[in-house]
Figure (cartoon, rainbow, N blue to C red):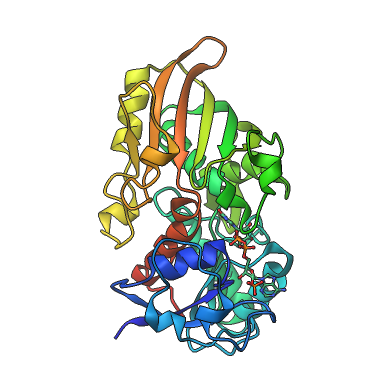
Amino acid sequence: MKIPVGVLGATGAVGQRFVQLLEGHPWFEITDVAASDRSAGKPYREACTWRLASAPPAAVAGLTVKTVEGPFAAKLLFSGLDSSVAGEVETALARKGHAVVSNSRNHRMDADVPLLIPEINPEHLAAVELQRKKTGGGYIVTNPNCSVIGLAMVLAPLHKAIGLESVAVVTLQALSGAGYPGVASLDVADNVMPFIGGGEEEKIEAEPLKILGGFEAGAFIPASLRVSASVHRVAVSDGHTMAAFLRFKKKTSTDEARRLLADFRGEPQARKLPFAPERPIHVLDECDRPQPRLDRDRERGMAVSVGRVREDGPFGLKLEALVHNTIRGAAGTAILNGELLKERGLLP
Ligand SMILES: NC(=O)c1ccc[n+]([C@@H]2O[C@H](COP(=O)([O-])OP(=O)(O)OC[C@H]3O[C@@H](n4cnc5c(N)ncnc54)[C@H](OP(=O)(O)O)[C@@H]3O)[C@@H](O)[C@H]2O)c1
């Protein structure tokens, strides 16, 4: 018997990834799909304009789309809801006893909500108990912004072993990060947009501090480093590329940094969770990698690729990183979060 799960915002870019990635999952089975009133009441195959390769799995295509009010058979709900509605909807569902694993920004910085990357901060799951005291059982767990997931994966082993003082990052973000239809083609063809709305830079500057920080005596303690971000939308379908400049608290070498990145493992690897990549970070040797088209699907899109780790005069060290924004950067990490909740006995 598999564990029933629901997908909120199932018709959107992230929702479709959930549906695609959960096909054949060894533990989870989609029993509920929900979206806006525009989609509710229709079979999923009609409500959703499928924009991924192949077709939606037949078992999901035939499900009737519900409104986000439910009721849902599944206790575990993956959310890819638009942020205009995610905040209130996710709170209401947690109060009804659901475990909501969300991609939306609304609750990421809440004082009792884990901002979880299972390889980095699984101890933050202790915050779930604070929510359960209020709800009696349900809770919200969030995963970070899509660029932040790639960035934090790179920063975590370096910060833990050496200590980071400050980070500057320039992102080149894929079109699918804006959902569908996203950016107008006439804005982005033959062009680079040096702005992404919705507080993208602020999220990249704030979220790593919560992720890399601690959870002690019932409160999150932010990590003491500073992050500066400059974001760009580029004409790439999937895969966010980042150039990161790292200033450490003590001297390090490119060899040590490469070794720390390549050796990075966490609880998902120790527990052999179904969605865990064998190696969360792949360090590449080629001088012209990573590239979105060539490297985004590494380990089924769940591994971050790092290249060009090199010394830098003003900062100390610089590198390039690439994350698949709708897999490792969204639905894939959320599924890994769900797997960790199950293994830790935290599912309602
Ligand atoms: N795209 C990415 O790479 C990415 C990465 C990380 C996080 N995120 C976050 O994930 C969330 C979804 O992003 P997306 O790119 O998948 O957006 P999207 O393609 O626009 O999909 C939004 C989903 O929310 C539903 N929705 C919209 N308004 C609603 C309402 N009033 N009530 C109920 N459902 C409603 C839509 O349903 P209908 O089809 O019925 O309108 C659709 O299923 C956002 O919060 C985004 O910031 C996205």
